[in-house]
Length: 376
Image 1: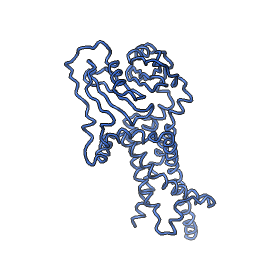
Image 2: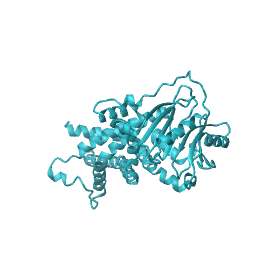
Image 3: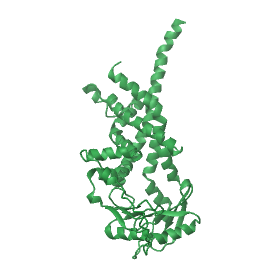
Image 4: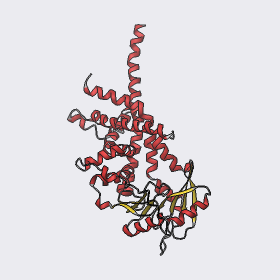
């Protein structure tokens, strides 16, 4: 068996084994790309008028949110931007909600059940196939790894053997027979989407595996690890003196002062006495790349660590960029359109590939049938 035939067999059987999962993951990813735009059109509580006054501190907004769902714990608080409502995460056991509030007045705008939210369901479908995460994650990850192998093997199979074949590799023959048209759709679209498809697949795997992201970051740093930049500061649990203000308010005020240009702020919970309070200031609303990271003592509010965006290594910046690369956010609306298109093409490849295989099986049976009749 030649090398090309071996690659063809590998491409075929891996495609048949993973095709359905790749289809689901790709389609759900395509839908999720425009989640913010669709939410803004269908969820009016997300947007509000900018007011000429300071926003309320997180402790006030958390208290209002907790009153809306008695017995629930208010924790992560996200100031989404000057013209957007602030979201407070509410949880009790497996029940989870988002309370959306006007950060200028404290008015409660909406309490949203995350388990019934459409895009939360799409996200879990994309990441876990709606299975228990411990099971679904492995199934999806194996399928994505298989998809990476298939994209590479597909390029090998696509590669023209001579100049004459090269002319036929870059366009779909729309006037040809349905079988030929399907064959071209699989090969031509697969080739054009392969590079960006690899980016989407590999960035997705980096979200799943921290060690992979660390490896990519080290590669961007010329071999220098980014582990030190990811290290969390230790919390002195012997320090228990309570400040005059809530720790979350101290953290919020500090970030407002030190990262004045940040449009979006994330303030973590203070429920664990041994874990620092995670806080992040994002340069642009609903974008996650350009960010200053802070850690505070959960009892005293003391600043334990600050990592401005400009001080980060190239590897760390690449790690911060990973989600925006995965969703196309890094290039704004145009990047989302590209990610959406590539996701749709990725979803089509298992279908067109299956039809190519089925057509060949049908042809093989047609050629074998006269022999069987003659033998009879």
